[in-house]
Length: 114
Length: 112
Image (cartoon, rainbow over all chains, first blue to last red; front, top):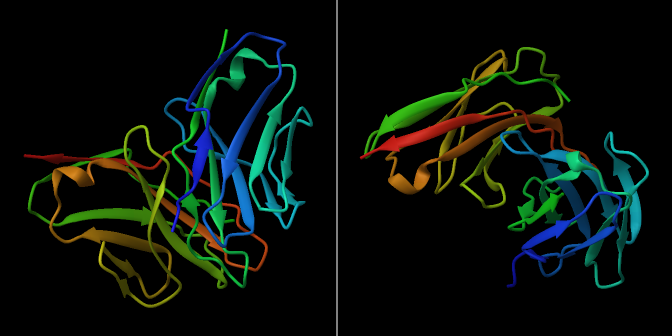
């Protein structure tokens, strides 16, 4: 059983640029959630995808968008990067069949915006 | 989702039981209590969850008070690898709702 993987591990961008982060969910999982974790803070929910549809969103502006593919892998896209977007971006997958009490997190992508 | 309150930091001697408290006085009847931990530079890891009854698994025990307004996570024999930030989360567990609301957690340091 393969766990949740994310790429890239680290990324450096400049203000105004666009970035795409990728997540492969755990085998058999059809729900993916994305979180942003600023230094010293707990993760903050960005949005969730279930069977390729956005299904819940946190308090993030529209320049944060995502996709989920038929194989349930997912992308997080951030446009017009700002300095405050510097953070660890985490994705988590869950089975999506019934109530999922356990979510499985990937190791994260560390984004630095200069 | 209900708000939780945790102490910002705790120390525990290696080999002893680590008891991490969490206050969730506004918890609703259909909200579960979850614990996750995050070891430095890794993604959070699920530990345990409960609704009303005390729960135990291979990692930890969860003690929920009768009025459900507080709970305690117990790591029975703490090791250095248990040094991490521990998050207590309460949420309604419903199909399609996977959102976890993290606070700032408790930074647990295991002392050799």
